[in-house]
Image 1 (cartoon, rainbow, N blue to C red):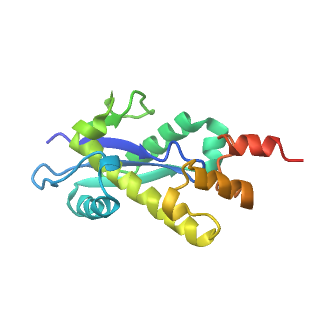
Image 2 (cartoon, rainbow, N blue to C red):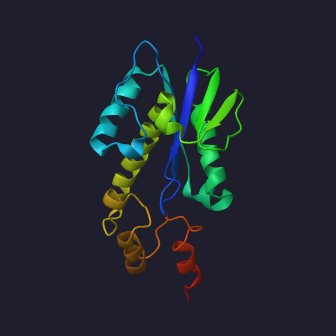
Length: 190
C-alpha cells in the first residue's frame, strides 16, 4: 500500500505566533467525510474533523517554527522548516509527500508541490485542518496570557483591532519583529 502524506501550513500571514505545519497519511479504508480547505470550514467543523483525523488517519504529525525562527530565516524558510519537521515527525514513513503550495521543503522522500492542494487533495485538506486547529489553540492560550490582546478573535492577524492593541499596549515577545507594522514600530521607538 502506498502511503501518501499530505502537508499544509497555518499561520504564514499573522503578526504574532509560530507558523504551524501538519502532515497526514489517511487510511483509505477509513475515509473521513467533510475534508476541505480549513479556511472554508467553521471553527466547530474544523475541531470535529481534527478529532476524526487524529482518530482515523494512519499517521499524523503537527510541528511548528518559532517566532525567532521566522524572524531569523524569513517566513517562507520557517514555513518549509515546519513542514519538514511535520513530515519527520510522522510515525510511518510515507512513500510520497504532497505539499500545498509551490515550494518543497528538504525531504528524504519523493515530493510534489500542488498549488491549492488543500482544495483538491484529501491528505492536504486533513493537514490543513490539523495545522489550523493547533495554531488556533495556541492563539486561544495567548488570549488568556495576554488579556489586553484579542488573540482568540483575530488569531494574531494584522487586523485593525490587533494593530491598535500593539500601538496601545506595545510589542509582545510573541510578535514577529520582521513583519510590518511591528518592524516599523520598533524602528520608530526612541
